[in-house]
Amino acid sequence: MADRLGAAVIGLGMMGERHAAIWSQLGTTRLVSVYDIVGERTQSIAGELGCEAAASLEAAINRPDVDIVSICTDDQKHVEPCLVAAAAGKHILLEKPLATDLEDCDAIIGACESAGVKLMVGHVVRFDPRYAVAKQAIDDGAVGDIIQVYGRRNNIIDSGRRIGPRTSVAFFLGVHDLDLMRWFVGSEAAKVHAESASKVLANIAAEDSIMALLRYQNGAVGCLETCWVMPKGIPCTLDARLEVIGTKGMVPRAAQSSALIAPRGPTSSTVRSCTVSRPVRCARNWSTSRTACCTTARPSSRRRTRGRRSRSRRRSTNR
Image (cartoon, rainbow, N blue to C red; front, top):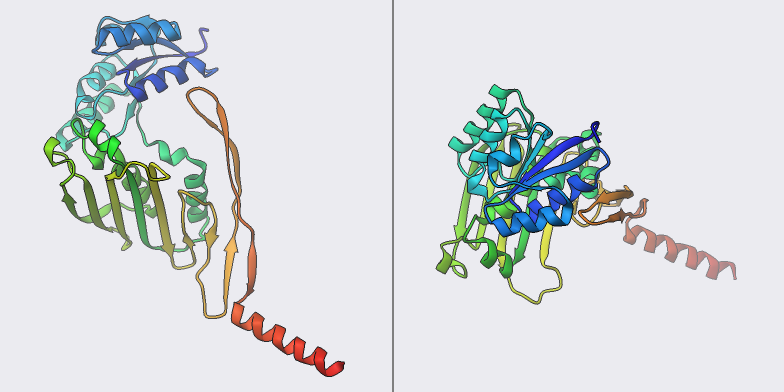
């Protein structure tokens, strides 16, 4: 057990519970302590996973056998646990977003730099195999210089009503695609213009939807669409799409497919396929994600039709 890294988890909502479960399951880590402002929640998770139910934030973090701290509190409450963990010399895995304003972001980053501890924000979509395939293709030059990137992440109204009082649609959903767009483009945003609408969730002072246009320092442009007021009863509770178009090709649907489609000309189109088959670690079990498509390089349908007609006429003449 001594060679395993000890982990503490602060904040035991849905994501905090998952962090705690995974730290307890990994072969290289062990769950040492958990803490939540709701005492009953702390006792419940600690009893289930066999770790200390800490009576305070400091008690959970300051144990000598804690090396890593997962911070999964509400978005606007990230600063205090980060400062306590950094002061104690503990490395930090922080649920996105980093913070809800620049002052808090600077405070967290500054504390970690001063203490010499590692800080990682949990942008989990980067580890989704479908997006990883797209990133690899971009890095390999298959897409060329990126011209534009489009991200969409829409959720059902239940999410907006449940989470809207505590955060915004930008921090809950849009942050994923803003991170992916920046990662794919490989450049910082130089200019951003955004507009929001608030009708369905106006009674809780939350935005229904945000649309944003971005220009990056390398000349690429981006568009972000995100909302959490899709009606209940639709087949899919999450509508996510990410599209990248470059000078050589495109990634058409990173959220649903790993295929790369080259530019379509007047007579042909070429599809490069990528197949993903790897285990994805979940809180409770292992699952396998697999996506594949066929590789084709063929003339347009009009030219193929003409060829069939010509061959048919020749066969008729030969008879």
